[in-house]
Image 1 (cartoon, one colour):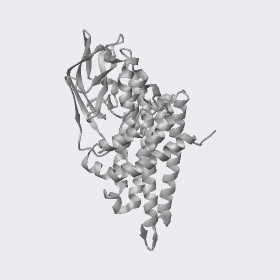
Image 2 (cartoon, helix red, strand yellow):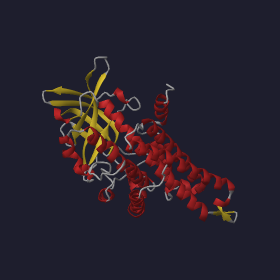
Image 3 (cartoon, one colour):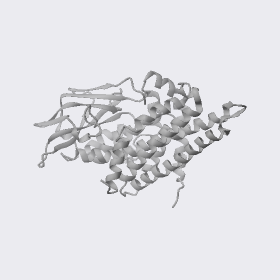
Image 4 (cartoon, one colour):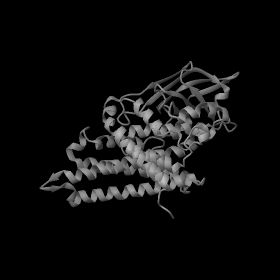
Length: 383
């Protein structure tokens, strides 16, 4: 077994880390305070090549392996969860379905702009009453001649209502199957289409510098050619997309845990009590040792899952485990980091306060921790 990164992956890590520290870190707190999406850093991330990383060059992508994409996401998350969310959702949820399931015409139409970071694309799955029970979608699409007529709503959709959002992939009920269950299909809807509105959601606890949207469809008509893949394949497409998305969430958990750990370690060396650095007290040293150990465990688990994907081997079980473990490791590390900062850890002046808030979404989004345990239990034959 070879646990070393390739030279290209090592260079990528260093370049993204340097970029995040210089370009994102100085702005992260202000953007969080204002709940403001930054078009300047979005443009800079695009110029660095952080969008379309796993898409072939013929469609405008970088043609890299999935491990490289996850490393880049991890390094952005090490500094700020909001920017990492933009990158992760932009790639795995926005670009992913179009790349893997789109027709040649759909790929040629949308991917070059998305891979260049000139535009963003949303992933319309969650509804007010369809979260973990994703197949219980109420949004409908009826074929009327050569057009789909869509009615319904979606919620908590990342990247869907910025000034550069190009459109969304929407899962809809398009009929009833022979077994009486819902026929679910994915349909592409461009922003600006009559009957479709996307509105930013504010008042979030976490990822306050990312764009989160509520979507509304009122007799929204799109060409029947906007169907993504075969009719009735929507749920399969969404679940396949989520397998990759779980790796992205895992990368955000891993990167966030690394950032929180480093902040706690550095603070423990300069903060003194009773005449010596607080990190020299065994209770605190053991917290830091645990943080380091669990972060290393999380990295091995996540990278293995990504390696399996790159080898075109089954990875759904490993993706669920990595998403679950990395999310919960960040929970533990962020909690220890705040504790080590004491009262200062509760102040926005210190990044650990933001890490602590940003972490919670990782245990909820793209399959809650409870759902991940159900997925794992099924895949090991326990359920």
